[in-house]
Length: 290
Image (cartoon, rainbow, N blue to C red):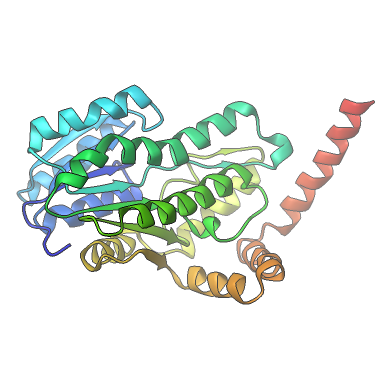
């Protein structure tokens, strides 16, 4: 995009983490903001920070998984801000469980937010984006949209899907005024682990400690995302591990995934917990079949 001043940006998952940091940076760059999240208190805090720097902001408390609420959102945003130029589909959740421990409710929750939320956002706002002088869509995938990781089957499924969806959408939008960026963050210090559903509290605690100590702040991710909007970059990797593991997958696709998982498990000290989950899966399968 040639400019950000006087543009309107819709950011989902704006109550914390990458969404919050991206919204605040866009506001400082001159954008009007429509903030979306299920957390009313979190949205209010983000909105207050934006107003302190003189930004124009509206808040919309809803779940991106709610189709009716998302399809009603454009009318609210247009009434408040007059137009839409940027859509950041950032809202995301995860379940830290082996596949055998995932319930169907877990799958519905993760798919509803991570995948349907992206589809709802794009479908609801597409007409407004297409008629804008210039526009951009940012869909947040993940490092786990590049590497398949144990205990993250639902999260990986949705983040791989967001990657494919965005790449296909990019080709459909080629030649229009709408650009797209699919983002693959690695370790970013957000609240996603603390808010996750987990089968093993110790596994969740290990992941949370890793994200507290060995990751980068969301403000740095926001800087890269806003730069990608300005440069109309189709794909954005954030953090060294994303670049390294992406390269590994490209060089040796199947073996690369195994090596990438080993490196991740070692760095997060999760190897033993994954083996425990495998033993539980076998034990539970035998019980169900007996």
